[in-house]
Amino acid sequence: MTRPHADQPIVVSGAPRGAADAGVVLLHGRGATAQGVTNLAKPLYRHGVTFFAPDAERSRWYPYAFDQPRERNEPHLSGALDQVDAALERARDSGLPPERVLLFGFSQGACVVCEYAARHPQRYGGIVALAGGLLGPTIDPSEYARSLDGTPVFLGVGADDDRVPAARVQDTAAVFESLNADVTTEIYDGVGHEVTDDEFDRANALLDRLIEN
Image 1 (cartoon, rainbow, N blue to C red):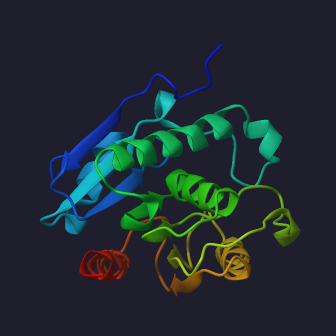
Image 2 (image 1 turned 180 degrees about the vertical axis):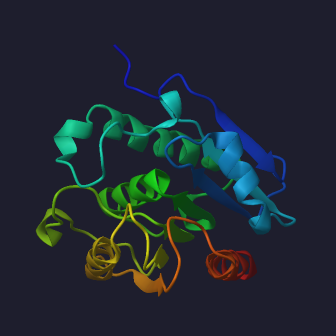
């Protein structure tokens, strides 16, 4: 029996194979799609960047809330992490190793990005997690080891987000810092569960730095 999401496509857009200097793996939120997050990420589009957006089965990466025990969200969570692996493999096939790839996620997609990076620590081109964080009732930093080797990380959340408390994002930031990431966290006053222009500006700055190096 295959894991959830295994039969779902990966939407690829932007620079064609062999013509990219950087890649972005895009993870959509609950109720959205790969094409939807591809459209959302239009402010990130520029010459020389390829985008890889895996689709979740039934438009959700896992069935229950992010603060439920991880095992309750299995096997969907493991299947979601497998899809990030598959997207990174597509990037490698295009000549883009992980250190040339930015991981970008919103809401459930942000949670999956955080879980993947914390459980597969290495140097990435960057991590942008918006309105999401590590999963589970609480976060135990001792569960995570090894190093993100200076990977730049941006975590953004609205102070009025009714789904993801700012404290969870701050706790996630502490884990990434313990994994030797270069972490920036921003909590936006008067913002709910949404993506802001400033968050796209932060993501664009990371992508620009990746392309220039």
